Image (cartoon, rainbow, N blue to C red; front, side, top):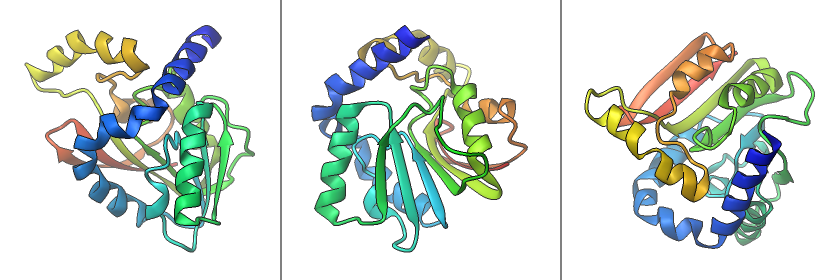
Length: 204
């Protein structure tokens, strides 16, 4: 598994300089989804998979954000965005979502946006999120998942090796099911685009 993680890290390190450019067409929709999602963040916040830091400008000013990523190149891009917006309430750390270096019950809010497509062991990562989220806290997610449509779902399965090979992202993850497997029982789901892009709020 360490070899697989290193391979995905290398892919994201490689793609970091052009990542925002590649995602720009979708970002025109996603920026409003990010802003709405992050308006619900409270208190001590952990962002898992900060990437190039697209979420950072949308956090409420009264929260304290610890943002992690396992790609050093992505962290560097996020640091540029943090500096650009003068965000003194953000701390950036290089860390693997599957092995969080935080105590139990540390964060009021945990955030992930388009992250659990690329975590090699998604249930393990979600269990870590469950562990570090306070019992009265919440998890806010914006994730793309496998469609359950009779045509689109199988098509996503067939096409999945392409994005997986290019930069380690799966397009056929069932993240809501994985949340349940990780121990979350109270899960609210809103479909934002078809049944593929979802806003998810989960409570420990």
